[in-house]
Length: 294
Image 1 (cartoon, rainbow, N blue to C red):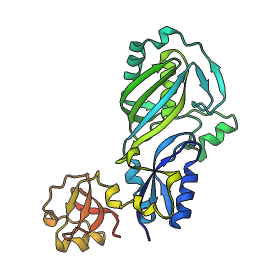
Image 2 (spheres, rainbow, N blue to C red):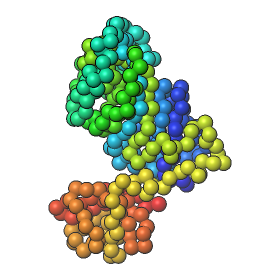
Image 3 (spheres, rainbow, N blue to C red):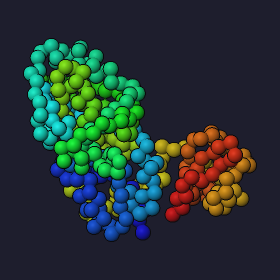
């Protein structure tokens, strides 16, 4: 049985489900993902294989980087170019002044509350928002706390703006584009989206889904340890290993020679460098949070 992660470079036009299905057919293993990409979006789509599916929560939590293009002057019902145009507005030169645009974009950097789009997989009262949207029903949505860390490499080519965005999990780039248009005094719709990085996975290290075969797939599967390398490593001393594996919270600080900080998640190994799982310490001691022995 294979356990690990494969980083796919999703192409335009296929769904995330299509990608998962292809990998399932090749491997005949349990396969999941850490978050979908829209059919017309491209870029990094990490897939979890076998026991790797247990890592979803720990990989979803990380930040992301996108390359995005938006078009000024149009509003669609989906906030991207796949939707129906519901309103248009002339884009004047004053709207496109470089300093004005950069000032507006800079104003989005930082922590903020973002209203998710109606065409999203979020649920309200047990119903996905996009299901309501397809019936022509719009409901009030609560803002979600997100962080935009950086907006850079801004290029303006009337009526298009391209940029790179670094952001926290849960950020809807379609909503960001919409909000930018509102602040500029014209509408804006996302026309292109590429996820360049999520967690430790980058597009440069991914495999195009169209190039993946039964013969080469094993070359691209990362171990669970590699996927979690963002977390610091600690080594547990002999007699404490079985206690931790059996779910005991160890209060004896001699369980490791490594410095351990409260409430920080660590990759945990035994003295023979065998990977045990992920663990965390609180005031009562250290405990394995996710057992990942292969």
